[in-house]
Length: 190
Image (tube, rainbow, N blue to C red):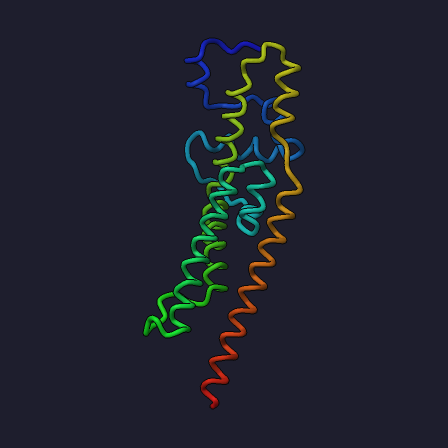
């Protein structure tokens, strides 16, 4: 399946229906409709799965680089907030710079959800487009489609693992916040 020279591949910013069906799988109709709208603008509609489960959706759709970046962002917010929280609790700083780590982690997840609900479909389109350009060198259409099916599709294990990690982090943050609040109440009552 030759598509011409390398210049033709660099200029291509559209996807064939069979390419989307091969990469995406069973939800290809939804993404074909959404991606057709991105020829004129980046944001068109909201991806509710990406809003409520941003990191999990990224892992499910095999957007691994964005998945890692989203977790690094949430971890950075958590570490900074927890550090300032500890500095305040142990009296090293006289005022509380950041709210409780539990709420900061939820806030970071909310910001990620807002971003990926608006731009998630666009980012996914860019990734599928890069896959098609990367594997367009296959002259045999059958090999090309098989390669797109192998590289595309979904990953069901990573979202489950990340949801479990999120749950553990939220429970530990809530427990630490609850413990700190009880400590403060006991201190005030003494």
